[in-house]
Image (cartoon, rainbow, N blue to C red; front, side):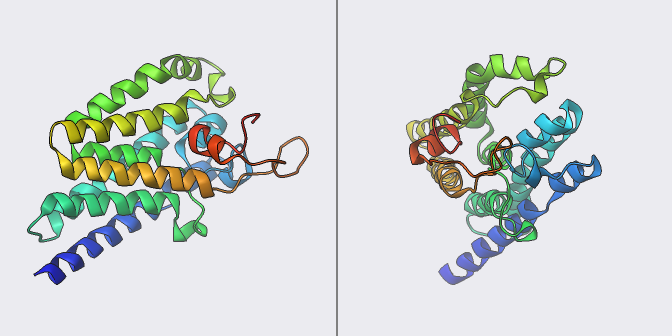
Length: 232
């Protein structure tokens, strides 16, 4: 029986990975003449699309990213037979986050997975997600207002957003432990760990002015601010 469950979890993770690795955002940007790997942060994610493709296509990309995580978790739970459907959903959602971060379709160089992680956490426990997302919005409100104004999408990246992502995920985990919802809390902890891992290992594009890679790298700056150093 344990073996059957392991197979189910593996199938759910694989299903999620396939969904997460689908390079939809990359081709959405290419349709607008933008190669995300060659602009901005080089990140295959909605944030980079927003800054270089505009608000409309950026908003569409956010919906796609979030949808990947939610759809992967829900499909895994509904389609795969399991005695523990909630854990099956977790496996599907985590697989989608990994697919967005390390897609085989793009030589394992994808996005940061924030939107896909949000979609998965939403599917795991909507109420806990709402609390964490409210904290995220509170921390990034000024940045969001700035970016939706005309010309705001091209403004420099804010350090508030990466910190808010980590804070929102951490609150999700803590809240899950506090109300004895250990399955989504464990899932949130896994997503948080993957977020840190992706930030710590992501390559950084060359400086647009010098054409050179960052001179110095700071692990702490990467983990907290999602940038190579504190000067970036």
